[in-house]
Length: 284
Figure 1 (cartoon, rainbow, N blue to C red):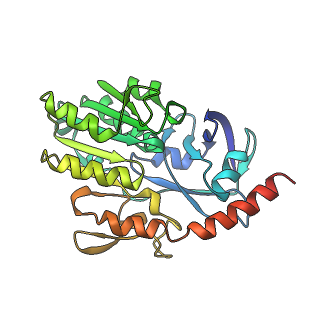
Figure 2: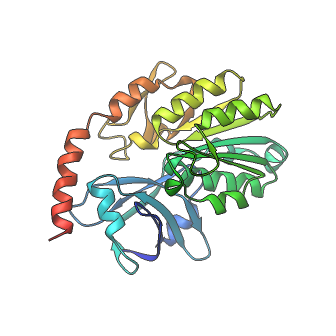
Figure 3: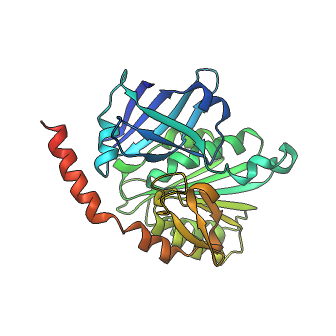
């Protein structure tokens, strides 16, 4: 059993948890994910590793209550335990293999949409600590859905905020900020975009105009997390890849986003039914 030692509500629908998992904390790297189950009959849920503390032996996860299983996770409290907490899984970010000399002085741009701030944070933190110049764009539908603003500000040289409704930062989309930075003469050696699939698609189209290498994370289409279910099949560079075992990070310019978005919508009816049953169970 894996005990929840800390729980914070970041927004009314997003919670952060620190979970006791010493072995995972000792080996986790930016870009990887884990699998949780709330109980013996629970669904396997892939979640990005948001942070890890090797000394305390804890791993941090962030969950948004959008479906049946994620609502069950957010319903847990400090002192409760997960039945399963498996990881780290997936391939770490490519810059993990770069030397400190290769990282120092390089310019990175991170684009985090909504909950994408959670997986962006450990990457920005890692690079900033090794002397890279890190700029971060954070976008959300409104100010209530912005997370990790303070933490991201501490691990970036420049933090840009935008919301669809203008309730925080600039009004507009992350792509507007990308265009604005480029118009101001900014340049970057590499960029990373993580968030909703539609955001990553248009961030890719925008970034391509500036010929900046771009990585995206396809963690949002993962289901089983082992490559056995096939739900996260995606075409990358004309070849079939599995987000959970071949990724979750890929060269953005090689990803077939339209196919990925179609696959992401395959289970909507089943999820609505499961969420209805979950609501009944939680309120009994």
